[in-house]
Length: 258
Ligand code: NAP
Image 1 (cartoon, rainbow, N blue to C red):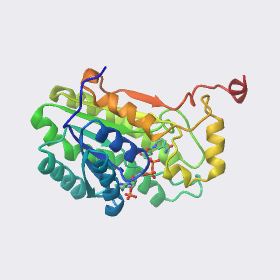
Image 2: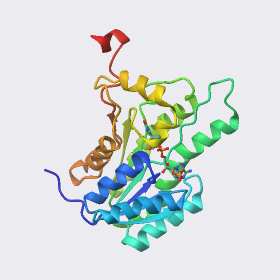
Image 3: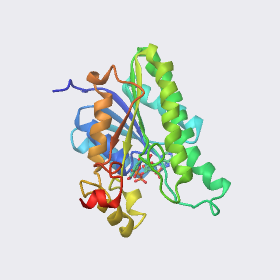
């Protein structure tokens, strides 16, 4: 149904595990050339090797999205390795919990620095390559938490994820003349290593609050990212796609039971 993305150059930040790994593997299966980015080189290399073993093309790069020099080096390596940057999936994120009254300024800075400033730095670093080709696809991994819902302990996280959408809307306007689209996927609760770290009770209660009665898979999110990267989505920019099994829909617990 959709055109091929064969040979496209793709950067995925936070690709060593979880949703980023799923996105990288999905694009790898489509014949894209992947730069798998995370702070831990060995874990990124493992994912790159998995993609290569499956018949794709990938290399790993160790970088911290909070560091401008790292993001510029990341973009340079993608250009050198693959001849350009077609698609950026700005996915790296952290979600440590801390309720107000306990949350420190350092806690707040760490989350906003990774999730929001990291998005800005990754996008900024990739723009020269995209503008040079007058084409590009930028897909942000936001969340339902912040833009739509709230959850105790995640006021800083919610602010960072809502902030990504504010960033996206103006970026989409500024970059449209260059043929670059900027869109966001908003996952609900997705079964990842990061989510598992919140504990089995959290995972079970979240699955029970989803009308589809299961957590999402990383492939569910990757499919949304793939759509935004497609040629067919070329006239869609500044938009967000909720991928949550219906989690934001019930007005009450009774609505779920009925
Ligand atoms: P995860 O399993 O904890 O994976 C996070 C990834 O980000 C890892 O590859 C990690 O590798 C990387 N990372 C973290 N900080 C980084 C930094 N400063 N620089 C570069 N890479 C960094 O998390 P996940 O559940 O897949 O979540 C991925 C994204 O989806 C996040 O933006 C998150 O907010 C969003 N999300 C997740 C869910 C969910 O239910 N899982 C729901 C909504 C939104 P290193 O530690 O090696 O750097």
